[in-house]
Length: 153
Image 1 (cartoon, rainbow, N blue to C red):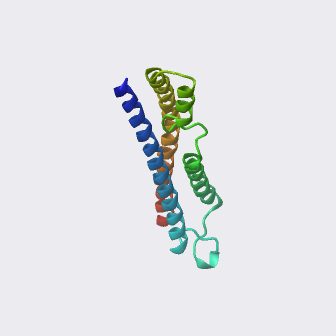
Image 2 (cartoon, rainbow, N blue to C red):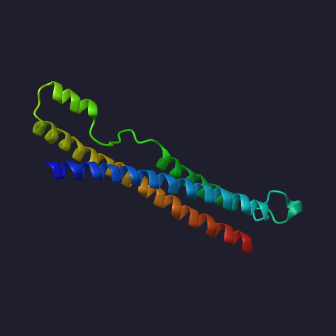
Image 3 (spheres, rainbow, N blue to C red):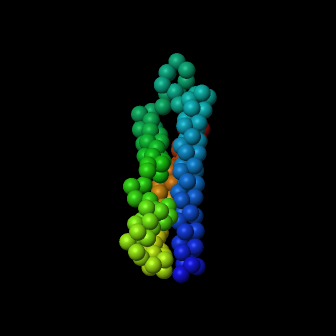
């Protein structure tokens, strides 16, 4: 049982680290998208003033705005707090079990079963956030592609 307890605790720690890493990468994707948009405006690729050169057509503007908007939504989803995230065994629950005269072996069995359930819930939530991060990364590539096409026209 000790081995299972340690494995469950370690898995919960790894999942929490993975969630933190996904959020950091999502922030990086959003910052890169913002920087690209800002840079594109600075060099004149994105222009609303006809006196300064060719103006972005409404279709191009809608396309670029849609890509950046959906990218932003994906990033916000990754950053949004998870409603039910499991970090490890609850000292309160363990103390309540102890106070109700559970044996240490019974407490470990209960806590391990709760941690395994938490690992499953975390895994589901983490996978959704990782898919949103992948979508944001793909949209960043789409944004770069659109900007390159606009730069060449």
